[in-house]
Image (tube, rainbow, N blue to C red; front, side, top):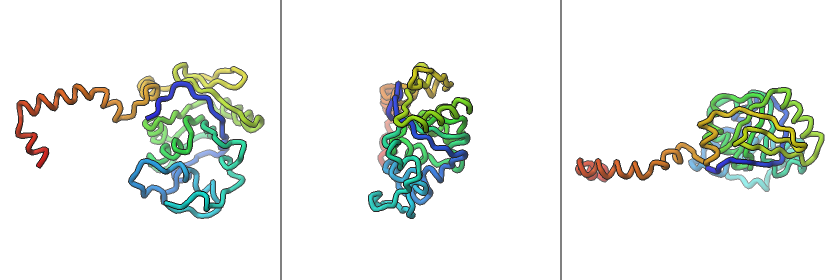
Amino acid sequence: MKNFTVHQGLVAPMDRENVDTDAIIPKQFLKSIRKTGFGQNLFDEWRYLDAGFPGQDPASRKPNPDFVLNQPRYAGASVLLARKNFGCGSSREHAPWALDQFGFRAIIAPSYADIFFNNSFKNGLLPIVLPEAQVDQLFSEALAFPGYTLTIDLERQVVVKPQGEELPFEVQGFRKYCLLNGFDDIGLTLRHADKIQQFEAARLATKPWLARSMTS
């Protein structure tokens, strides 16, 4: 998992409330057994005018010119500005996968669905909660100024606006630690790889029959 320390990125404002996970990554794209390749179908039913299916070449699709992520001024955006209850609906972990693989590193919204919020941290995506009034102001500025960027400093827990104003945000200490160091659940476990190997070696030394049962 990529670590997150300080990130400066172009902001894409998605002015919709209650964006659910089926809109983020529609159900027909969940058939893949891999954890990659979902970015091209992020917000598929909104990004394209034609129906999409797994394995389809995005170049053959008809983009929706009115959708925010298809507008040239937001090309390469890595900070998604959203409204309340972002990520509601089903618990699919594919939603943060798709956002991350499209290129987003952080989301800013007044609130999130709980499961999506938790899944985001586990996959290196930082969901920031700011008061609704501050989010409203960010929407106004992002729409008014092409090329609007924000700097997110996770260590200091602030969102820095272009003119230098800082907006503090809260993040739970353990989640912050994992993001700063790029640890997912597997990475957290592998910190103790030496101890795990020592335990396995000691166990097999005292119970050698386990080696046979494990390989049979």
